[in-house]
Length: 165
Image (tube, rainbow, N blue to C red; front, side, top):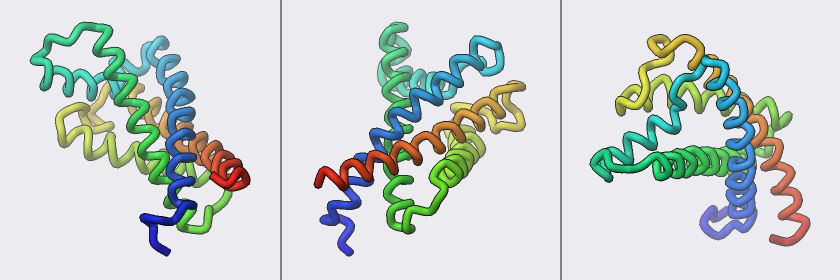
């Protein structure tokens, strides 16, 4: 199988990206609720977006630009990671149940990003040194994201396969 020309891989990547976008909206609902309850503080996607904007705009980005940047960062990460996960599950024979595999992927994605990547680049402290409440909220949000993206991705992939896309 040549992954560069296999239409099923392209279909899975597209389904995963769409599903990841939907799942990121679901995840954001949980995060906004937790933020309003005082559990989250500044959201991690905002911290990442602010760091990028401060580096490229020398700290001069206005609030509207920062909000748009946060949305782009969050949706982009969610869509990209879900696309890769969807294609990987396809290549592995689409293990079931999708929600369990997706939730597990979301937990691993959280552990890698919040345990290693974000602290390494100075965006966030490691979970054990972060503000109380943020780590469990973000873990739960990532599990929700993973489960939703896998279930929706599988459904979309089946629809696209039937339509010949």
